[in-house]
Image 1: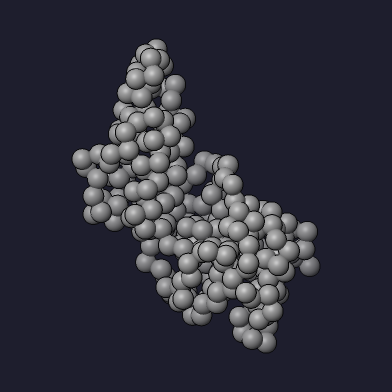
Image 2: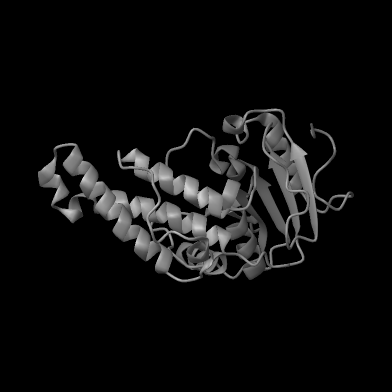
Length: 257
């Protein structure tokens, strides 16, 4: 018997929050495919990003049982569900990516290298909305120059003159920005599927996920960092994946907080 395929959108790298992989769903007989593995896509829309991730991971032409996503990867997972025809979208603190989030993260990247957090003169909402490579092109130039100036200010002029020395750092910044911007540039395709959004204690609820046939939010009384390691979350996930369910949502009322 073929194991049910689960596709996972969860941005790689270090973070304080637990990961979708911590659910250990492969131990329950699922074929878990992690779609966000380096090299990460740098596409101009959520649909193109998801399509690239699917192709890179070599997802076969088989039925996908569910697509799972953490946080602002949710729009990318929705696009993947639409592409594959998967009826189930299971989110963890799922939320849309917004221009404000892109701005906040950009400022954070600047301050992480000791550069001023002021946005560059070319920054605009229209550029973030535009489905082209322009935003990343401008960002690469600005971030490269910001890192160079920061190294000079830190009295490391030898490194400051060699762009290749800090190209990996700028590249990681661009991967993160590409992810956030692509996730924002989505049409929220109405693919006929359902959304279950498992929420930590303080995560805002999205009452009706755009494009979903039905949306169900289940709040777990835990901190965001521990959402994906708790036994309650794991049980809720297994219920959501065990279909068909009599309530039509793939998750029971028990465990909702």
